[in-house]
Length: 401
Image 1: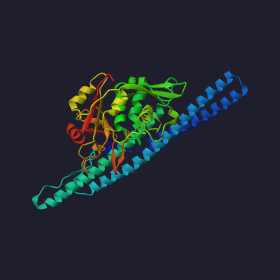
Image 2: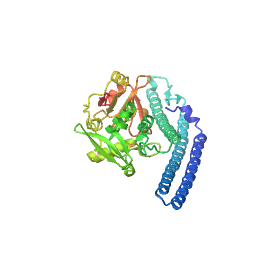
Image 3: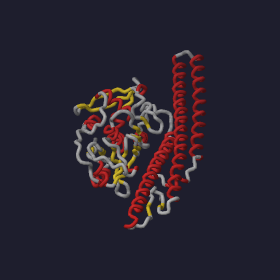
Image 4: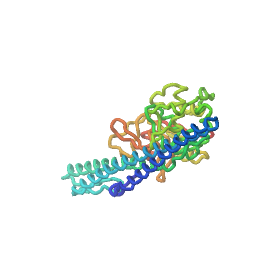
């Protein structure tokens, strides 16, 4: 997480410079697009033969690809500029917390992690004042931690936008408009942002499979250049079914890549499930989503323990683990903002951190999102005790899928 000292020292100049560079690249791509379109028109006019028209078509396709680059660079620049402005606002908020603490004689902090402590001495004769200072320290801690969590989201947002721009290339010809290399599959899983569909269990399962065995995605999502569609293999009653998805007709309010709002292979999968099984009800916690993707029935059980998670992640390829909060107790309002988990929601369990905490990925995307007036992060680290308190169910999909 971003620290207090890092946020207080934030200088937006570097981020804005990256946005300027991105816009410059976009203008160059746009100019190339216009030149290629002019060449295509000239070739089509000069050579009316089939070969000449084919050459013109190739030039038009190249022009369209550069047009996509121009759009992506422009969108990336906007994301980075917005993130920089947000960081400046958050810097002002953390400075306000620092000034408030500095004006109180019995408060220290916030430290780099955002914690404020009370130094008011415990006294039975001044118990009320002691409790008041403890309460104020707690309130300021929560405010600082909320700011740091949002700053972390802004930093991740800008970083992912920059990575998306650096990694931009012409669409692969063998896999259609979606990058289906191992790295591309995993990056799109990390960038995925759930939208209006209540398919968190489906998305969390797909995210886990992407990091475990990306070849499964390639084998079940195949580009057909003749029809311009992806042929997606799903499973119904344990038997494979093939669904054709036209990537040019995807809904704009389905899952997208969080950095660029462009469709991904998860968007294709989501649409295939919509076409085959109908609208997805909000909050799927049964084993059906896993069965639709893999053909394997995986019953829900208690959330796997830390030892189970470690053993699953040590497999080659690793297991796919999901956990949900369907029937878990509601978190208290004063829980650390960095540990908030969405009620009635499924997360992908991605492993354990160096401190033994359970790491969970929110399919809403790396920047998290809002629900009932609260911000929920894109990734949470919970102690095993917190994890078992706030998660009610879990599923483990062991390879081979």
